[in-house]
Image (cartoon, rainbow over all chains, first blue to last red):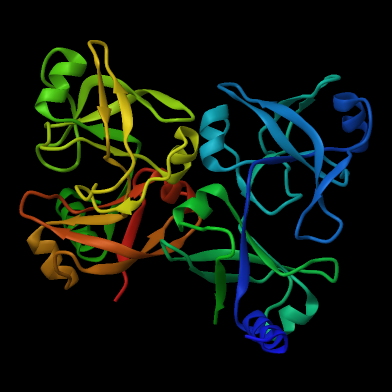
Length: 201
Length: 201
C-alpha cells in the first residue's frame, strides 16, 4: 500500500473506530507533595497519548492497610489534588475498596500512604478506580455524535470481545481521542496494544 | 412477602436471569499428583455451586518464571489431568501468558511448578485463563433456548455493567446453572456476590 492510501485508510479508520489504551495503576501528586516525596518537581520521562501528559521519572510506593505496591508510576504534570488510580484487583491487594469514579472526583474515597525517596505523604482520600472513559477531541465528538459527559457503550474488537456500558465521554480540545480502560477491564476483554473499539449507537 | 410468593418470585427470576459467580485462581490435580503434593488424596472443605465439586482443605504454591502465588485453592475431586486456572492479571505476576481456553483444553498451554507440603510437581502444560462460560442444566438450556457449546452474549446487572461476548454454554444434568467469570472479568464489571446476568437473544 502506498503512502497516500495508508493516510486515507488511517483517516477512514479514525472515523469508525477508537483506539483503546490500558491504564496501569498510577498516582497524581501536587507540587508540594512532589517536593516532599522527591525533593523536587516531577521530571518528564515519556509522553502519554494525551497532549502534555507524561510519565515521570519519579516512582513511589503506595501503601494500604493490607499491602503495598512498589515502583508505581507517577503521571505529570502535577495536579491540584493527589489521586491514586488503581484497579479493583489492586484494591484487594492494598486492602482498600476504591469507588469507581471519574478522574478528579475523589470526595469520600479511601486514603493511602505515598512513600518516595525523600519523604512520605499521608492521603486522607484520593484512591479511586477510574471510571472507563473516552477522551475525545471536539472534532471526533462531532463525528461520533456524542457530547461531553455523555455515557455510551463501547464495543471492543479484542480477543475476548466485550461491550462496556457506562463509558464516560470527555471532550476537550486538549485531548487526543483514546478510550481508557483499567487493567481489570483490559484483561477481561483480552486487550493487546493496537486494539480498537467502537462507540455503539 | 409470604413463603409461596417468595418461591414464585425465585422461579420467575430463574427463568429470566442467571446468577453470576467469580472464580478465583485455582488448581486441579490428579490423584497421583495429590499423593506427591500432600501425601494423600484431596479432603473436601467446602462445596461449590456445581454438584459434587468442592474446595479442598489442601492448598499449594504455584510458581512461574517471574513470580509465585501461595495458598492457592485446590478444587476436587481429582481430575485426569492437572489444570491451573488463573486470570491474565495473574499471568503477568507469574510471568506466563496463559491462553483463554475452555476447561480441559490445555494442549500447548504453558506449564508451572506446583509446590505442596510433601513435594512438588512440574507441569509441562496446564496453565489457562478459563474462557467465561455458563453451566446449565438441560431444563435451563431449554428455557434459555441455547445448546451445549453454543457461544452467547451475557449482559451483567452489575455496578459497571458489561455485555460479555463469546460466553460458552455448557449443558449437563450434572451442572447447576451459574455463569462463571474470572477475577479480571468480575472486577471489570464490578461484580459483587448475588449479582445476576441475562443471556442476550
